[in-house]
Image (cartoon, rainbow, N blue to C red; front, side):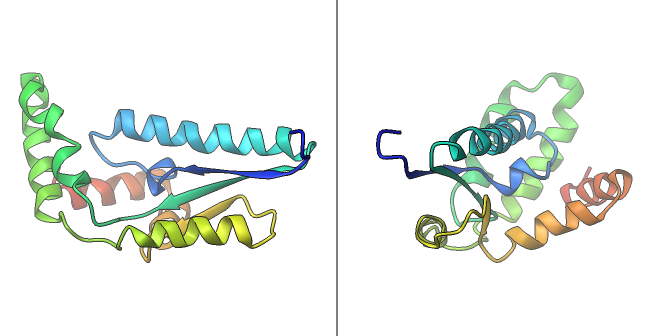
Length: 151
């Protein structure tokens, strides 16, 4: 504030724009990052500070294998079939995605491009994933996610 300039970069996810089964807490937190960052961008622009949001897509990590561990063991019986199907599907597709260096490159771009652009996607599938969600009616998107997750 004292310098009248600066850039804040918040790391979100395509999960802040789309949803998948069993991601309630994850998506809630990422949607919150999106909203908070956008609102903050209005407020801080008046004092010369920019806010940027980086939205990675699939990145090579253990996200798909460890993120749902808490769901597998402690699921109420009514949710067990959903959890089992979904976790099996996620684990079968684990390991895909871009290298994590892609995120660093996009963060660098965001802080050095001199633009007022708010959102930056990271990874080859991120923009496609977001566009798919934006271009499908809710019922079609939900049906697609159910098919892809095996539920």
